[in-house]
Image (cartoon, rainbow, N blue to C red; front, top):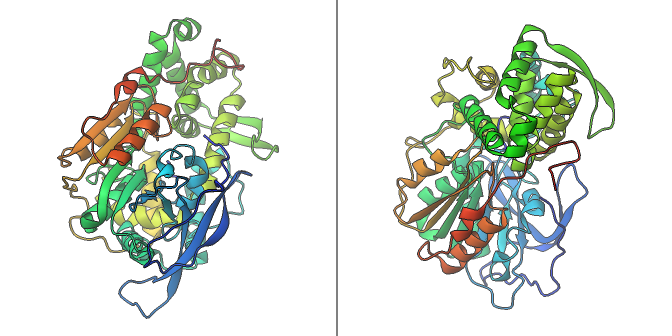
Length: 487
């Protein structure tokens, strides 16, 4: 099904010295568990427990749902009393599943602090609001609006839960209930992508519990998610092509890179093509009707990481010069499938339709962009079907704080560009805002950003942080052939 947001793996077993030493007031029963990353065979050890909360906060005696809480215990002997609470992206990602990808990034931080991962209500093992489509995941589903409506209605009918109670505001009340149940006084909060919105909502509601704030790929509270996806994709692709033009080898191989993409779109607008490809995930041969809308979706998925952005000039050139678009479609399918496995679609819609859709201008004309009005059409269609929860007045007002805040962005990010972090930082009087040159979405995994984040949380301050490595960050080198970049 269509995924609106998205929005690096190393297996590190739990250290034999890692001991979960919770405060004396802890009320959650934790036991050993194995966390998995959907769609892969990757796993990670942790300690897991559950906390029951009311699905409808106004009816504490009504239906209960269980929140899944996973903890990666600190690996050092001296453990600080303020853990890191991680807020996952999406919306729809489960924090406990994200840990399988994130652990190498937080390995140094974890030497002194426990990492707490709560599956936000509606995700992972916290009453996941998801639906199993009987239709194979492929690029065709991204643009078939009739199918999207039918699948949305089907999803709603199958849900085990009331989607009105799966908003960010209610979920952050859950997070604080977990904090209290675990006996923590102060926590360090960390969010990536949509998780930066969740972290800001938590910060506004419970500022007295927060020590530091780390925001990676920032969503300012003022933004209605989905409104600017089309122009932001164009901005990202333009940055990729500008870097290609500035790279002697890339520019020599693909001197008409931007023009070639425009030519490809022109051809597909005039005449969509039926192509056959081997699905890189299932290994099955499938037919795809590749249109301009489908190509926009493919380019969007390839734009989420610097490594796949490095493929775009080669794939576009090959598609235009040979007429074979199967490799371009295959690469996009590979990226899309991995992202789809991680997201709970029902929870995604519960957040989007309550918090964003009422503030989106669906009449905006983006016909001049690569994606056109496709995104807005899909948002409107889905949210006409989906029930909406209540959103507090002033939800989209900026969060004001003097707590230490570290913000990070990728220069080429197609969904949360650097100007979003700058907008959020306007009301953070004690903040540091860093931009990683040539990187895309979710930059904390880069070794430079990882080390800065570690030092920031250790110090509890943005003052005197050594950030000189940011100047040396470079994007992944462009592919010169299907074998990769030049040595």
